[in-house]
Length: 233
Image 1 (cartoon, rainbow, N blue to C red):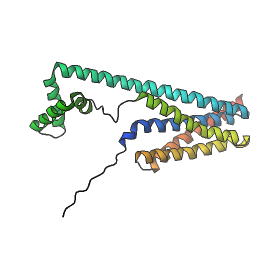
Image 2: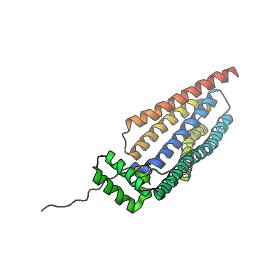
Image 3: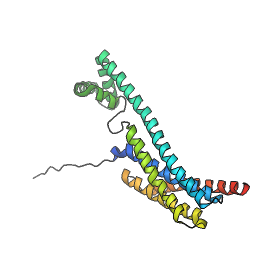
Image 4: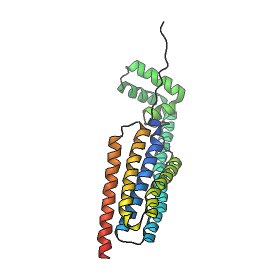
């Protein structure tokens, strides 16, 4: 006797929107704050000056990330809404032309002409705007822009990332600030790369190496600048 088994698939693409903002925010929080602390500490600044610079970088960075994400994603959202409004107007003005356009898209994907038209007619009868949004414009519920979600996610994750190097700077002896914050930042970046890759269902090695390498370059650059200008001043 044959048995029917439900084939359960688990896709992670629905996480793209918030995952991108979360990884970007945390990565920026770690790299920018740690680099700022390392650069100031390398210039032989006082402990209070180092902590003040780190705290200021945390607050300014979180607000900047939130504002930047909100503005950029809002621009995407505005474009999506404008395209959808234009599509609604075209559907009202010339529904037959829009049906042919959608059928042409399906022919391009491999359906024969008759079947492509049948699919287009049935999908448009169910949800004409949704069909054109998805198949003509590439707008779907998964990828739709959410400015507030992106802004809050970026600000929160930036803060979480920035707290790590700032906490190490606060508790490490002054002579260990540069080395300790650098090590903490690189380890945190490696963990972040692994967590982001796992959440997205990707392999671990490349994301970890990628994020750690760029972080190391930023830290090295700011430490060099701190040493150079600290000596000059």
